[in-house]
Image (cartoon, rainbow, N blue to C red):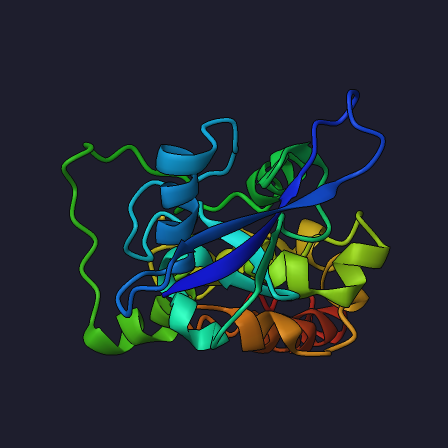
Length: 239
Ligand code: FES
């Protein structure tokens, strides 16, 4: 048995617009969409471009639009689509570099703007210093630390698709990952409280629905709205 995969092909600057190219690939019960793409690349058409690395839902590089939905292609089985066809497109909301590869520079700049690392201030401790944490303190931010930067949340977010200045779900969730960490002393209010940051979110919730790691960015954003509102009346309140 085979299944038809209709794959978007596009070389910006050379092609007038994306076109779909159809390929028949073996329909194996244990094949993910990514396995189908790898079959095409290895056996049918070596010119196809797409990203992947770990093949186990960890690296976050294989996100694409599968039959209209933002999915990790290594975690989406071909058998989910019955007799097919399966339509593969790049993630929505990002410029296409080639075929299924998108430009993620915008996200990387936004991510770095929230300073996604532990900030310690006024200290001169050796690099080997330990910062003990209780299980409860770990639990406070653990959910947000599961983000793998796959960008499915941005692709599914109607705000980001309409307003590219929106800081976006993953960057805000990762800011909260550090805001809620008992070891962090940073203050990300200046970035997070902008109109294009948490206040830009209209709480549609698509980011949470498509997240393969159950990070729940929508919850992170609503939670920081509360923090930001509190901060406006209690300026010394940080979390
Ligand atoms: Fe790494 Fe899919 S290949 S998450």
